Length: 114
Image 1: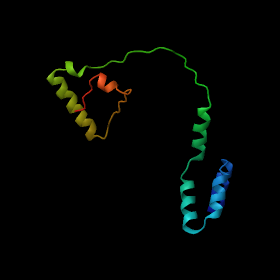
Image 2: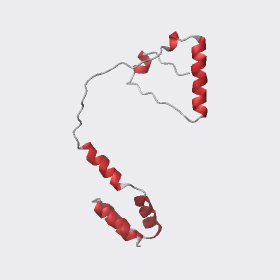
Image 3: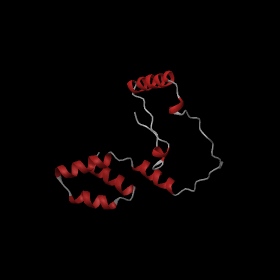
Image 4: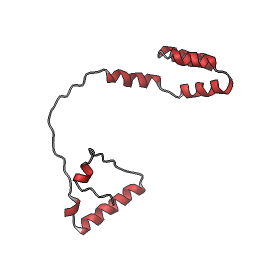
């Protein structure tokens, strides 16, 4: 199999002719490096993601529900120690969580990062 031709065929299949033109101008190590980079790209997945951006979203339910939470300021010393121990175990196990808040929301809720 011709690696260069296979790469060109993939690029043409996904309408990336501008990259084909660039590839044809290169030679040697630069061409090899570009071919290697191109072959790491999942063009099929990129096209699926792009096609999904064109789809209309249908929201079936339009309700907002409260989520349960604990107020850090109201936890007992024992509860805080228990949660801290659980957190340390999770970190040691390579587990983590991410919390994203709207701009300024952390300040308004007086979130403290300790």
